[in-house]
Each structure stands twice: as structure tokens, then as C-alpha cells.
Length: 290
Image (cartoon, rainbow, N blue to C red; front, side):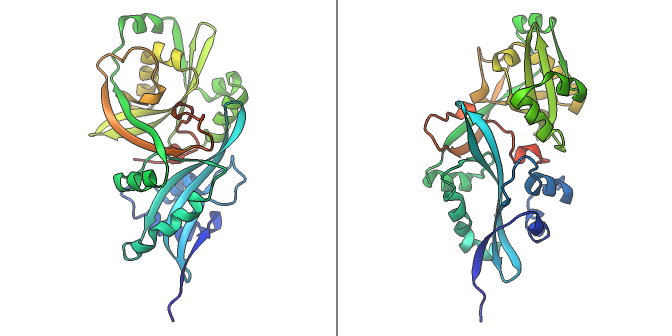
């Protein structure tokens, strides 16, 4: 008698079941502890579910990760679910869509998919998800004259002690939640009496190391002092350039910048939740080694 395939909500206790599936992804830099931190250790959330898995008997055949968080959007706390790592064993691909049923049922959550493959993008688009992003800027460390002048009056630090001392409110919580990330860099820009908190992660494009900016607290200040970010992240992570999603852009187009396709999706709970309100925090991008 054949055993029926079922979908189960899975938590940290299922990590060993799911790990062989995750190790099928073309991400050789990811260790078992990287996978555990990224998908099964959301210390900031009390949601017991870390994803949904297809099981046949006692074997996991497929998985889709769910990283839950709560963010303040438009004056109220918004539950968010960031998706990750949708995978099904080749011989069971006909059951892949079963994993989307519990995802589509998350009507009280803004659901975000930051790294969909082209076929996944098409599937989610047909299921009512909207474009979150279409491209990002690839920025060399070449400032405009005004940007260079601004940089002389500003400063940037990656010191955890300084960040803990100077951040407050929601940004202090973000830093405390994500300071254990194995890949994220946390940076504080200062200029005059203003501050801008940033979070960046490493990414290679065509063999060139970049810093991908995942969160920008004060976007105007960031674009005015971008060259300071370049300098700090070059020293910290060897980044030769910055990658910034286009929805975060402010002001004139950066000098010598290139555009790189970057298709991301989301399904907001409210139509007024605009793409520029969604960042890369509390997602797989906080733990993924490319």
C-alpha cells in the first residue's frame, strides 16, 4: 500500500529532515549551521512554523521556508512572511504546488519573495503576487563632486559598541535581532546631526565582490554620503561596489551606475503598502552565502 504525501508545518525539530533537501541548492558556501541560522533560528519571532514540507512516510520530499517577522508600516505593526528555499525532489515535482496552499492561506501576512527563479516568478505572478522590484543599481566608488564634498564632513562606523549606543527604537531592535547574522554588516553614517543606519550583505557578480544594501534608514543621507559607505564596506568586506534596489533610490542617477535586472515579488495585506516600504531584513538575505 502506498503512503499518501502530506504537507506539514515544520519547526527547528525538523532541521535534520530538511537539511538534505537544502544541500541540493547550488550554494556550496552554505554550511549546515548557515542553513540552521537562516531558516530555523528566528529568535525575533515566536511563530513556531519555519516552513512547510512534503512528507511521504517519514521522509521529507520537498520544502518551502517561511521567515516570519513584524515590522512597523504606515503606523501599525505588520506581520510579514519572507519566503525561501522552495525545493522538491525531482521525482515528486508533480506535488510541488501542494506547498503553496499554506502560503496562499497566509492572508493576514504580507508575503515577500526576494529571490524567485524565473519559473517561480511566473507562478507567483499568476497567483496574484505583485512586482516588488525590477532592477538594482550597480554602483562603483565614483562620487559626483557634491557627494565628494559632503563626504569630508561625514563619518561612518561599523563598531557594534557605537551602534548599540547610538541606535534607538526600532533600529536598535533590528541591530539586536540581526547582529548574530553570519553575513550582515551593520553601519552607521553620520553627517551633522543626522544619522543613517544601514545593513549590507556580500554578493559576487561576475566574480566581483559587491555589498548589497538591504536596509537604509535615512535614504537621502545615504545617497549624499554614499562614498563613505563604499570606503567602510571595502575595508570591512572587500566590496568593490554597491548593489542597491532601485526602489530605494533618491536624487539624480549615480555617476557611472549600471542597471542589473532584479525581479522580486510581494503580496501586501493592504494596497497602501508600497514596494519602497519593504526591505531585505528578516529574510534569507540575512543568512545566505552566495
